[in-house]
Length: 143
Image (cartoon, rainbow, N blue to C red; front, side, top):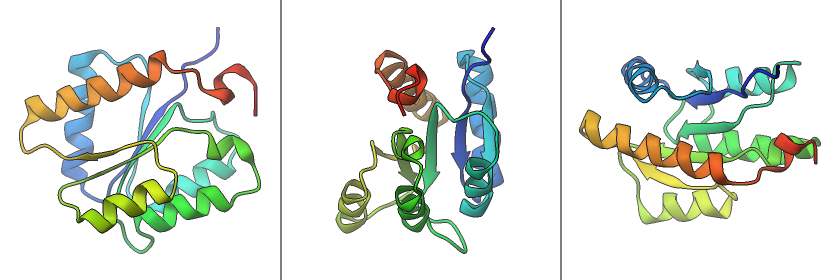
């Protein structure tokens, strides 16, 4: 049996990771959740022989490499399988220019972090449901 591909969260706030773990439990999401605090941790994961992620959700305000630089590094990678991984930005606040930049970097969505647990849970439920119904090349060996 093939292990489900993980969903990766990249956020430098440990409270956000705790909220996501709780949402995962409550929604019984079938994909393992992997949390990283920096873009470098994600890039190292992608270079390893670990399973290709089902989805990546990244904050834009990371240090020392911000979410935009992280996305650029993934797009620059020679391996096309990383380019097809759904990549979603999320942030507590964003300017129009930041949202435009996210889409200029071929992100697959930009969501604002909700101020309530209930709303955040609904956003995550909707994101996961959407990508579960979408055909993704690497899940079918087309990369």
